[in-house]
Image 1: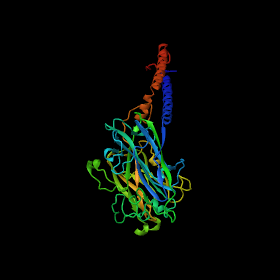
Image 2: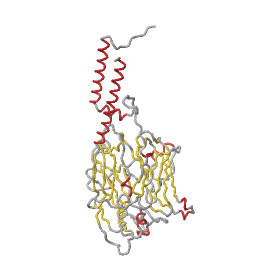
Image 3: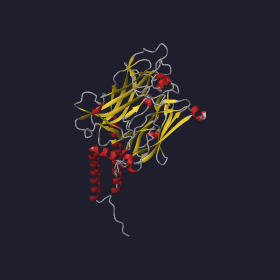
Length: 462
């Protein structure tokens, strides 16, 4: 065998070996995912009661880690899943914050909320869903993760903690189940918000009418009763932080974000307070064709820093029929459509009432590097709701995880030439040592054959 053949053979063996080891590395990384399951403090409900609670310093994985997913559902004291037609999970939201170590109580003036990277000042959560939580994926694919617990980011004298907001509405024995979930003010007999401020003219339903401890009108004879303790059971998947993990940033966009668009570099500091909710008018009230009773709401949003879309999903309420995000040039970036239930059990509640999941579709789990948002790009967000009847208190939030551009290196180990793949291989020092030994054996064989006078190339002279 000539030297060229030996070289090709050795390179082939080395490439096959490195691919095999890389696959083992992925398996090892998947096996390294840790799972923690926790319960919120008890949620004491009765017929028609709305509770909107904030729980500080909840149990949560500690240390410098990468979040891979966060999921939640409402359960009873025995761990049984509670269907939406009994307790409607309006929303839950997970917030990250820094708290002074010396402070024993929850003094809001002394905590530092660590917001997501989105433009809305009043939407700071890291994760947040609602009725759709059971069938909505939140998994961050490899090699990406949400970095938390970095000691270099925590201010001196502070420690990282987590806050959970849970808004649940008991709809057993109520007069109008859909009306209670849409927080219609007439059903809650509310004329002022939770701070005692009179509701604005024309405000007929939404968060200002179903705040904590409000009561939705029950059927006659069921004004009181049905007390029970429920919990939000939340499951966190995470891995230990490693340099090979690519960090992603969380952006939560709101369809009600309609502030004036700044020009130039002003958008960097142009964070906004978003309305969070809105009302969808009935198509009868606007003279629309019954066959086209779809309320389409659009807004423009600027992101100061772009990157690759790794994940995306929308949050909609009853009546939602889908959402999409478009780039400045009109290219489609991501779509998310609701999944409506077809049964009775928790997670598949029937009828065109309960959204039991939001599909991420293939476009919202794109191949890394294939869907990109440029720095300062003007995005178009679109939310669609059915307007066959008026919808109150609906939401149009869009979550996206972005990975900022990473430096690339040339490596014959991977055609993708991505740093994490190369770095991961480098971390397997024993692989490189074994590969080096293999190359040394091949080189020795070539040298021996050359010394013996066989198998080498000879110059051709005409």
